[in-house]
Amino acid sequence: AQQLLAALGPIAKSLDAAGSAPSLVEPQPAPLLSAAVSWPAQLQPTLLASNGESLAVLSRSHHGATLPTALAGTPESFSFQGLDGLGEILGASWGRAGLMLTTASGAVAECPGSHAVGAWPCRQVGAKFGFEGLQAAVVARIEGTTKLRAAIILTGDDSILLLDSDEHGTEWLPAGEVHAPMVFGRAPHLSMSSSAEELVISMADGTVLKRAIVGGGAPKRLASPASATFAAGSMWHGACGLGGDRIAHLATPLGADAAPQ
Image 1: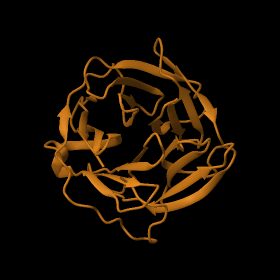
Image 2: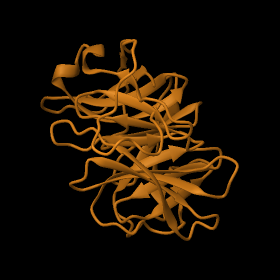
Image 3: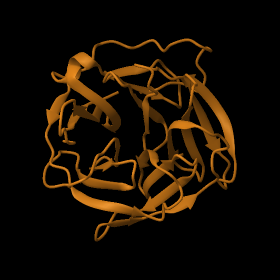
Image 4: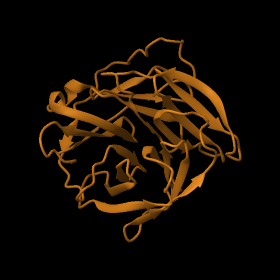
């Protein structure tokens, strides 16, 4: 069973000092609260995105479910259409126009509106990333513009690369670089706010940081392993912002037949 948790936090400026780890801001985050959710059969979610009212819980294999951020009711399952050949889903953001997905092939797909009758159509937008070996990636539209903003982590790298597209989405331009905290040798999951102004970084030990991409400032810790009673026996996955300093965070308790909750 996978745990869905609520708490939250910002991510920082375009450039950190090379090789320096981010300093965390006190006070300590509030405890996370677990909520058991019965996911549709065969759904193994690892990624989250929210538009403020609803939560999209996604598997890398092009399936997902939505439910209110209050975690009430039964999740509504769906499958993405139009992603054939683009690879696994690595990250997602949910803005006014719909979901924005980033895939392992470096392609970005936009899924307008919402799902209907179990299907959510998507179409590829913008240029592919000119990198191989993506470990984590997320894209969102920059509010008030036609540009896209991306945050990516490459295999073997300990930095998060920030990229902005041109106005037509045909070219990715470097916009900065921040430290990517590695835990247990695993790259963190990345989530971006719908306005592309904040980055949420969730690590393998349950720590979650939020950092402002625009305006700078130190990263803020939104969750720590000690803030969840089951942390020691869980595998942590993606997190996303719910507004303010609240987050949703996925974790799977270790053990036989553990299912997402």
